[in-house]
Length: 322
Ligand SMILES: Cc1cc2nc3c(=O)[nH]c(=O)nc-3n(C[C@H](O)[C@H](O)[C@H](O)COP(=O)(O)O)c2cc1C
Image (cartoon, rainbow, N blue to C red; front, side, top):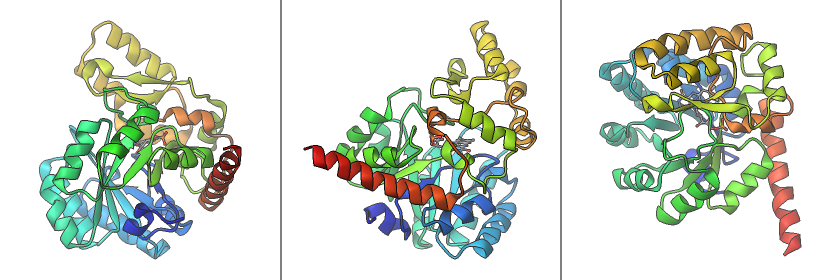
């Protein structure tokens, strides 16, 4: 498969792993990159730039293929501006293939990154933001539908509409995310103007993702209607699996609770532990509606191969109908 995205990042297939706090580790990243897609290390897993450098070097020992880094520029109590500066500087020094930025645009770092040969993409949920990303000089833009796990934009537009709207508006390559977990989604995204797809939830159900086996069972059992948007009232909505914790957060929001009451419930440390213990009611699991498409646990290699095969079959089958 050849698109401007495979060319840009030097990868075999136009499939990218998105940022996943605590889960996108050097090991998972390398497994995805070795399978011909673009793996991801999430910078916010680490406290300092030097810790991130260590993770990048670990991934480089496990793969000689291109790797990507997610840097999330959302309001944070853990990170100062100086730490973000270090994250970007380390990525430039380590000459990673790509950075996926979410949240605030990373305009001040673009020049340094481009000089180091690092390609930069930004995740957006609106056409107006995609236009800005192109104007700032990014290499690619990610259209993120409301279906996505993590923090979809509060415009609440589905990928089905957002993707063709962004693809018809900008000239830089567009990557689709939100609700994609198999080859049918890859084929659909390409048909709507994407040159690549980015997934997260589906990558959790891989052998190389370091979660408790109970998490695999939970993902396989849960359906597409079993996620919800929490923290909408705070202006920072997040899509999470419906569980006791999410219900409690929604109740508190309905009663008018603010950041001070909600923050302790949503601590990143709780989620970090829960992925490992398999305790599924005590933390916010930020998974997307694509959880309904997760049917089995595979290796990353099996996942990528089956997606590419299924995308081709889907496109051929549909072409035969015209
Ligand atoms: C467990 C998990 C953690 C995530 N953490 C982050 C993150 O730290 N930064 C970010 O930009 N996106 C994060 N996301 C969002 C993904 O990168 C991606 O945009 C989204 O999940 C795509 O939708 P999908 O899960 O349906 O594939 C996370 C998603 C999941 C499932």
